[in-house]
Image (cartoon, rainbow, N blue to C red):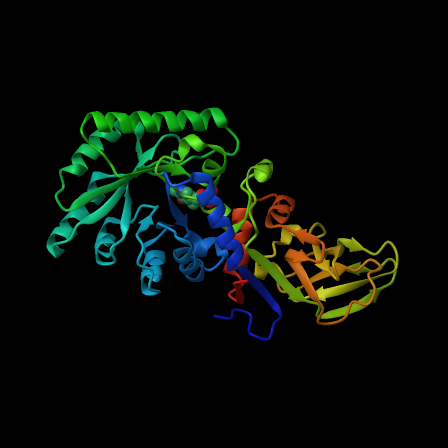
Length: 377
Ligand SMILES: *Cc1c(COP(=O)(O)O)cnc(C)c1O
């Protein structure tokens, strides 16, 4: 699993105690009215799905959410017994796996429900589904206006249990009016279902922003992802909840040297020494998920001080302008994301510099660094 080898000092640290802290913060916000479905898709946003999920079971998670059958099977094979919802659609021909592994499928069509029903009937089992409602995401799901008809049809299938119904927010972080409108349309649908004597146990719509900023969206199940990992979906939500970052990204100084004035560093010669300085070369680059657009922008922590990346980030290496920082030695620890002394660098800070979102950066670093160290302090 070590993609760059055991001997390359670049690694990701996962703080499972911080994960527990964040989970408890979520419980505090939602109270005992709503259960918590922990979203662990994309290898738990790059944090390591199996280890993260095992910890969340101990913390009291109620449900897991993943994107694919493969992820769900991996969880089952690692011994996870809690219910698992596949948030994405699956090709009809794989309906059997949902039944065989006792998974719950998000459903947008009658056809997939029929495939599940047929397989479940053959096996003498019941397939659990959550109906996905589109109230504005425009991706999966049945439009809320037509949902009653679909639910009625699926309800007739004897080997299907409609355990849940859910919708998703495309812009809870930017558009309060639209998001409230989605919640209202979803509520209206649930009332219409009730009038038709259809009572669906789990009703859910809250992603992380919903959990933090839309109490009206909690209903009786919430679906946080990002915030579990201690990442804020939006800077101005910081005062509303105290989260602790779970992922750190670290490396060690591989080499140092003096750079006379006027010399340049790295490909494209985009960094020119305006004065004599020193650089440290680090064994980390864009193949580790340290995005190349961070060239000449990102800072790292070294001896407790912030220092900037000098020149282009290479495939496996990067240089740092030490700028008068004394006594830097080969082997000194360098923090790319995380804390050192009084300073810290967050995924949010780097994502913003890179012109992307912290979700993508976390996935990118996680995916490219199987060299993970799990801490539980
Ligand atoms: C990924 C996902 C979530 C979690 O969203 P966060 O913003 O990470 O909290 C919730 N619901 C669905 C359907 C998702 O795909």
